[in-house]
Length: 623
Image (cartoon, rainbow, N blue to C red; front, side, top):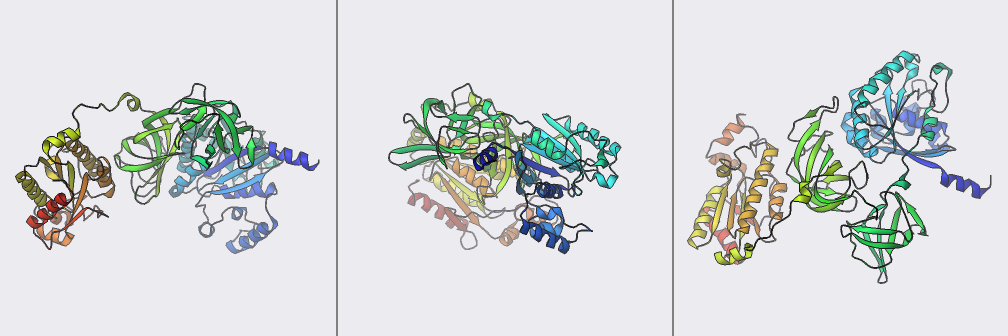
């Protein structure tokens, strides 16, 4: 075979992205080590190092511990478990493979979900000595949720049960009961011993009752969906202005293929255009396909920006909306709280939004739907999401890239969760804002004032309500139009159904923020006196109104002083355990970072502090 033919064959090889998953010690790393070892994809120095480390970590009589070829982290080797997702590459004469070795421990389920989101095939390992475990069910559910349509159930450690066909068949039937609730296109069962190599690359006479293919044969021959039959789509990630004469639109093709001179449309504008050039990292091409990073240029100039979607002209199922339903996998130790603002990052945009409703969470072992108010680490829920503005998306089953997102904390930038979109919520497209003839400016001019929110925050007993009450009296004497919203008073009516859990506190502030926004629209100076312990909700309240309309006032009173005052005896009850979820005791208070006003109640009396606020309003032309 000449060199040209060799490279042509290499380029024409099928490429598969595989996920290995299962419970702890099912043998995932050993299996992947076996695949690499038997396919001769290990460098000699790597093999030598692994042999040395096999002696160090103890091999129980084995020449080489295949798992050590994969468990790259020192912590993994010391604990004997996989912690992170390890990606490995190997190939056979017929196929190229990218394999994700994912953690089996429940604590690292989020890592397994990350690996599954990029895979074509899932290999679920089951320890023949243990059978189907809860973690096996959990991983099967996640594979189905993340759109993995082809799975291979590798029943491992057959050598430890003397290759007993009866046990194999029992595990197979047990798994089929679990998977019957899902819609896998391919579901194959293979008895193997990753340690000894049985049925991985070669068959073994010990399993002569098994007449099927080896694992590698099954992988090489499995048939995947033909992306060329799918509609073309490219989310615009960057408008490329390389020079004054060049304007291109860069991104990764999320589905289908594109050719020079093909007609496309841009969403949401629906403007049509023809592809003039397709530019790739290796130069101009006549055609590009799914997963390629490209820059496209058009025949004529039109308005296209980051967040838009370039797609084929055929009838499509993309949505432009601000609300949708989705499954969410929570990946953080801090609980998910409905109505809290988070950053939702999509393939080509990020938008502030909130989970408006946790419809149910899922018992990952029984698949039952459970009523709940929040999600904890590694829990999965079906949620309704509302964004601050429209974005273009698709259901995950139709397009993984356009149907997925991650949720990010807006203060720490930590990734909190991953989600897959089910469908658009109809009310997202059925409801629109109705402009009225009389607006905020007209109401404000009649009142002779600039509306704003004076948002008092601080611990219970800090003096918020006292100062807020004095402020309203002083503004009233100046003939200003005001309204005071006090935390205790509002809980007698509008928020009487809410308790004091974190989720109820979030909803408490969300409601009062919306009421405050309406009062700003009415042209009023709105005084809000709430503990409002969380930065996230205070930020949400600020973002509901225009710049300079929200004035955060931190009533800075140390907790010791608040306890001395304790006008309602609440601190005493909280300290004795009679009162749960009390701010400052067993529920946190997040001090404002940059409030407009700080009131030190230990050094000044309430009257002087009220004058301090009044002076701020005068200096900033609010009154």
